[in-house]
Image 1 (cartoon, protein in one colour):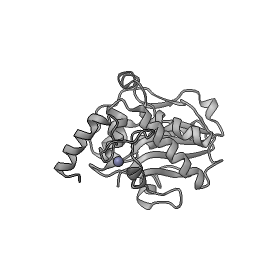
Image 2 (cartoon, protein in one colour):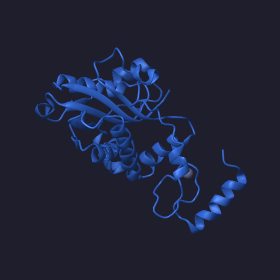
Image 3 (cartoon, rainbow, N blue to C red):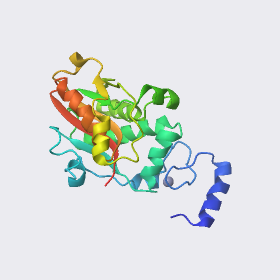
Length: 232
Ligand SMILES: [Zn+2]
């Protein structure tokens, strides 16, 4: 937690260094974007490309047949990952999603994921939401992964109805609510493909499950999940 003095200092420094780190709010040296080297080093990585992390794997285990359940970071309230997601979703910072995708892509390459997927498919936003935001944050993350893994991004899913606000609902109600609100844009292009379905964050897993079922119905060969952050 930064002290008051630090915050005041940071504000002062920000006058001269307009770019500040999303994590520590300190000034960013020239040439660095969004996150300083210290915060990059301390990112709460799950490292689950090395081995499966049980609490992440179990969010969807038994609900659907899948190959990999990949999550880059652990979400912690008020921590750097929350700040990153906030930037990405509410602060028009599409570029931070792209950067996270690139960073995770490099980890995945080191983990042996160089030839695991044929297509990367982002979870779609409702069109009205995407118009308002100007971009789909999951697609930004997907684009970063795509650049490094050399796997094509395919806008293979779309939302068919608006979902009501999810926050005050029980898990069962949420699962019901997202059911059947996604469909394949062109099922033929998904057939026999090894697909990495990508979202910004996994909480209950209901959205990934709904999208995953559509992909399996379309005849994908293998389904894997890749998210920027996972809650506990
Ligand atoms: Zn920092």
